[in-house]
Length: 114
Length: 116
Image (cartoon, rainbow over all chains, first blue to last red):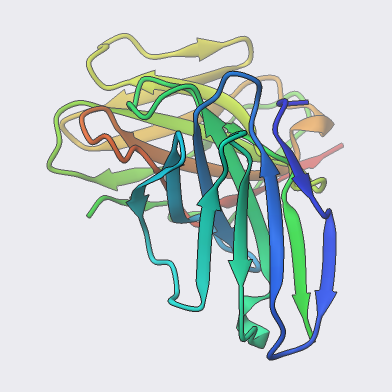
């Protein structure tokens, strides 16, 4: 158990809908990362927050947005869902933003768009 | 941008034997970290081993060791005395040590089968 929690574990929804994925980082960790893993692919970085502020952005679609709240939990919002958005979404957390700091992965949320 | 390449989509090994998974990467940075992650059917990402680029000595964790060739930008994982529990997807990953947006760059993975 990494100490990072993600809810829900599974999510099934229809095309065109909007969903929110939630991540609670490890106690004391200020940085949260979101990754997307499509079928049989490696993880793709989406976005990073540090202490409430956006720090880095990857190939995140405009239909996707995220935020980190004062209690440091983060939410990833996916809207106008398409079949291709079906994937495993991972959250990871670390104490700081430097490369030295270890990132701890949550168990992931499996999103299925039908 | 950094890229990580795993050229072996699938590998198999006999139980108790040794197997080596390959990884190459491309970067213009001199300071970075390299990782191998294991993803079993549960899909949990499990850190196997980590290597700091500034260290010449190859990292070792029990039955897992790496062969880090910085000039060749190569980072292979050797699993000795393979066990059934080693069967999983293995991902090689890169992370910058100087860029403050220190996200991972992952390869596409190698699926390892362990044959009893």
